[in-house]
Amino acid sequence: MIDLAIQLTDDGEKCLYQQIYEHIRDEIRTGKLLAGEKLPSTRSLADYLQVARSTVDFAYGQLVAEGYVEARPCRGYFVCRVEELLNLSAGSDKAQLKGEEKECRRNSREEQVGEERQEILYDFSPHAVSLKDFPFATWKKITKNILVDANSEMFALGDAQGDLQLRETIGRYLHTSRGVNCKPEQIIIGAGTDYLFLILEKILGRHVPIAMEEPTYKRAYRIFQSFAYEIEAVPMDRSGMDVEKLKQTRARVAYVMPSHQYPTGVVMPIGRRMELLKWAKEEEDRYLIEDDYDSEFRYRGKPIPSLQASDRAGRVIYMGTFSKSIAPAIRVGYMVLPESLLTRYRENCGCYASTVSRIDQRILNEFIRDGYFERYLNKMRKIYRERHDFLLKLLDPIAKSFEITGENAGLHLLLSSKEGITEEELLLAAKKEGIRLYGISDACMEGRSTPEKPFHNTVLLGYGAMEKQELEKGIQALKKAWSNYL
Image (cartoon, rainbow, N blue to C red; front, top):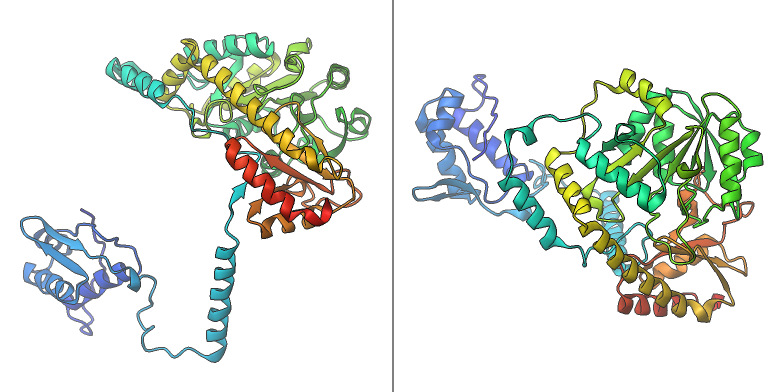
């Protein structure tokens, strides 16, 4: 049952029962009261509005007679389904549409029909992951066991940095899998990297000159913009961020993705990593933000340790998330601060509570600690590798016309036209065949990839959420869409 905040007036123009009737009628018409919702009883609404019960009875009776409300014996009054009335204005049945308005609505309908015809059949999103193989039964079992054994301590506020047990578990996982060297007190757990960026802004301060790879992860760029950071776009080469160009900026912080740069897929070699670490050590209060968002998925060569693993001066702020390795809805990220920044964190962020439920933290801790995460990760590596290799075979026939890069890691490839066909042309041709691709201009800080930039003729091809059969059909459709370019 819902409450009804009805403003009644005694101006004499409308009787009280009519005001109640019109208010409820208009709420139903505009969709603010939904089909099936229970209205307050006549007695409770009369008491709330301080009117006679017969007044409410009259209003409800009129609504029932007109079909807005139905009375169910021994249960009360419920809103009827009247979807065709939604969003109608009170006087719409009396208003006469002008010729221009009719034309506008007709054009709008035609555009809507056109969009329906452009139905997306194949979505090669670089951000999507496969959830079909997620161990739902295991997650459910862990959740059930935790709730059965729950005590009052679990429902307390908890540590602002996250539960100690989970931080210890994450610390061990990062050390064995990524070579990260840290103590539990250096780890901060938050609901996604967005929250961790907010914490980082309180540590580093506002108006910080920060360098970012161009192109880059656009969400991070927009968040840094909201901090009033002075953002310097540093071009990339085949090894990652150009350190010589970085030295020409005023940047005090550099945001990099060395294990698998998004969106280019570049894996930064050890030499370039050493150059970045040397740059960070050259002046006091310089730091590198290492975003290690999908390092778990690598298909060629040995796993490359994190940049933080080579840091001996405490200049790397390491960030990661379980969004791709487990599921996006988990919304658990982590940040490893250098010990030199812990004092600032405690001084500036001590008032911030953890944004992750302690129950969710306990579930995740047991999922990782008891080996379920490792088994699931190994399974998904195998699945993604098979899709990765299958996709590369499907793309063999177009290799003469397109350069394929970024195939060493991650969940997407890059296709670059050797003939200089622009991104816009490639995306438009694919869209006509019901294929959604993603242009690299979406990741450019200036919002557009131009011929002067090295990736102006490149599109992204994600495969994480697509089965082999869907990949095969999607690539066949893509070949048809790009037949003029092959």
